[in-house]
Picture (tube, rainbow over the protein chains, first blue to last red):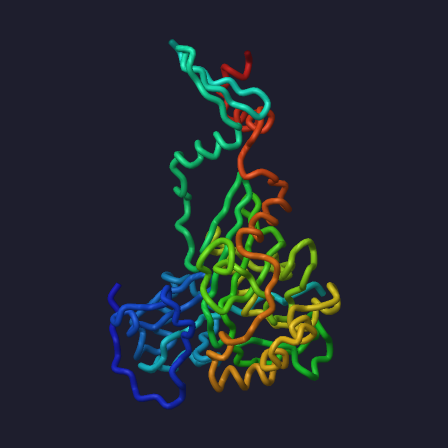
Amino acid sequence: MTLNLRRPRPSTEFQPSIQFGGAASDAQPETESRNVLVTSGIHSGRFPISGLQIRDARSVLAPLVNIDDNAVAVINGRVVEEDEIIAENVTMVAFVKPSAIKGAT
Amino acid sequence: MTERIIIEGRTARLSNGDGTGCEADVEAWVRQINRFSVAGRGVEPIPDNVKWIVSCGGTEVFIVELKPELRRILWISEDSPAPFGPEAKATAHRLATPYVVLKIPFRRGRIVPRVEVFYRNEPLARIDGPGGALYWPNLLNVSPNAHDCTSWFCTQYLAAEPIRGGRAGALSAVVHHLWGGHFNRSSEFHEGQSAFGKAALDGVDPRVTDVKRWEAESVRDPRFILSIPWRATELDVSKLIDLELCAQGIAAQAPGSVSELANPLMRAARPAAKTR
């Protein structure tokens, strides 16, 4: 897969997104660490999506990590809009699908 | 001289035809057969974040580990007009979670409503012992010691979700149900307690027993969540799997007697042999 990367605009909107743990099994080679961790349900992977708008990242990644059309993009615990550009210091984007009500009613 | 294996009760006897031979417990023998049989060629690839898949007949138990994350979580509002159900109101919070371990059982390809949720401050390293030890979470909608589970997560309304994509699709549905649906006070009402309430009763760190404080600490430094001394359950992954197999009527790890070997033999029997 080839992704056309855009130069990211400097962003002060987000702090570096959080991937914590840092155990040996989480360690990534340097090239991998430049990629953004993307999660969607059970799926996860690292992809070079810095500089893309969320909608473009979604379009490219939807078939790869099964992103639902209704899923919202979350960076650092906040929902971000589709035209938001994924800044260079963002390390993780989660696509979360709104789900059915929890518990019995 | 013909080699023969004779199975009687729980013992298998090998005769080499020259007067030599040996005998073994049937279960130990079957374990050896399993050990030297090719395994793991499932139809579907193993989904991301799956740590163990234990299967027996139509039963499968998936152990999933989700990495620490600063999440957006919808939590019941203080002024919610209802404690749960469609009238309940929720507010979005930014909450850090540690490693989250899920047990998701299947029976004949369908999720069994015995999903369980646990926490850890480190990734799983072993199936048993400290490396596989499981800790209580601090989440609403997780019910302690309910429905013959230790840390039960209600998946009743997963049936309302369209689930596609085999096991990966079903596992995704559970993960989305956990993080994409509102957390409410259903467990308090229906099972008497939630793991969130239990954490407060157990005197767990106050930074994670009040949702506003939990959020403030998460935003300040989400790594704090990995320093919380979560209360240990009495389970590790191995015991959790054993309990699930037992709940699904699987008492032994391998067939250990003639009668337990008879069913698979009948399933494998050639049509001509069946008529004899």
